[in-house]
Figure 1 (cartoon, rainbow, N blue to C red):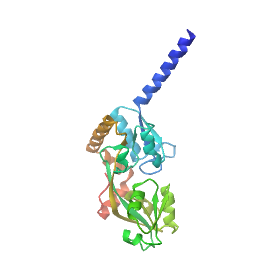
Figure 2: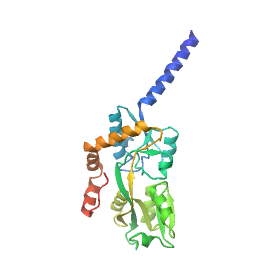
Figure 3: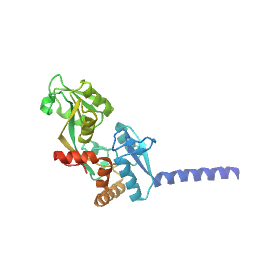
Figure 4: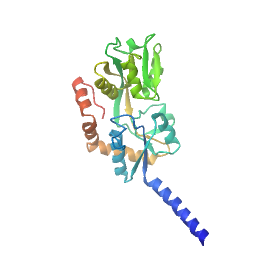
Length: 258
C-alpha cells in the first residue's frame, strides 16, 4: 500500500509538471538591450519585447515565463526545447532560417554607424580602409554584414554593446556598426565624443523565432501580431518606450520602426 501511494504521488507530480510546462509560454530574451529587453530596478524583465511577450501570452491565454539567455545562446536554447520562442530583437535572416523559423516581421530597422565626433568617417567608403577598426557585437547581423562586406578594415567583435561603444569613445575603434535605434541612443548618451550616422547600410526586419515544426504556434503568433498592430498596440509601445526616438526620426525624415 505504501509503495502504491509513493508511485501515485510520483505520477501526480510528473503529470503536474508536464501540465505546467505545456500551459505556459516560455520566451527567450537577452535582457541586456534596453529599451527592448532589460531588467528594471526591482530585478524584473521590462521593455518593448517584454510587453509584446505578455500581450502574446494574454492573446493565447497562457502565463508567460521569460528566460534570460545571452543572445548567442537563444537559437540553441530554442532548438533544444528549453524555450518555446525568441522575442529578443532578432533579425530574420536567410542564415538563421536554415535552423529556425520566423513569424511575420513586426519591426523594420537598419544598420547604422556610431563614429567618433572627430572621426573623418562619414560613410562605409571612409571606413573600409587599411588601419581602420570597426567594432561589432558578436552574433548580430552587424557582425555578419561586416564580415561579408568589410575587406580592408579590421573587425573587432565584442560580446557587449557597451564594450563596443567604449571602443569608439576611447578612440580605439573608428566606428561601431549596430542598429539605428541603438546608434541613436548611444550618440545621445555620449554627445561630446560620438556621432550617429543613421542612413542605413542595410535594412532588416525583426521577427519572433520558433522551431520549424511548431507551425501552430507560428500561425497563432502571426494572428496576434496582426491583431496587436490593428488595435494600436505597436503605436502605444512606441509612445511608451521610444517617444524621443520617434520625434528625432520624424525630424530627420527617417521612417520609424513599427
